[in-house]
Length: 144
Image: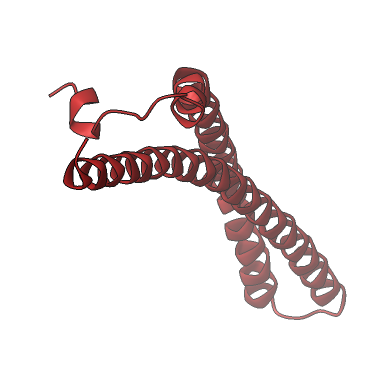
């Protein structure tokens, strides 16, 4: 084998190895991003619920304040406006809870997508990373 053939062969192996590493790295990035998105969404759901609890506490406090004002003979309109403000706060709580539940569902879907991706391609990525022979050019594996 001539020196030229050896250098081309070595270059091809290096290029192929780089392609395998890039493919495996992309797979790992996808799995990581899906899992991270699920975790972030779970955190967002908890923040929505935390805000929900805060608003619920505020509505209770405003109702209590309105009752105290009524006991001190504050005008009926002011007392009524406070009760109305508390009612508005409570009216959004159902929407906030529904949003938190939807976000939690979405979080579960991201986790399921990550697990499904691992189940579908994990063994392929492992096999590609541990092949005893150089992997072919990525275009060879393309289904286009």
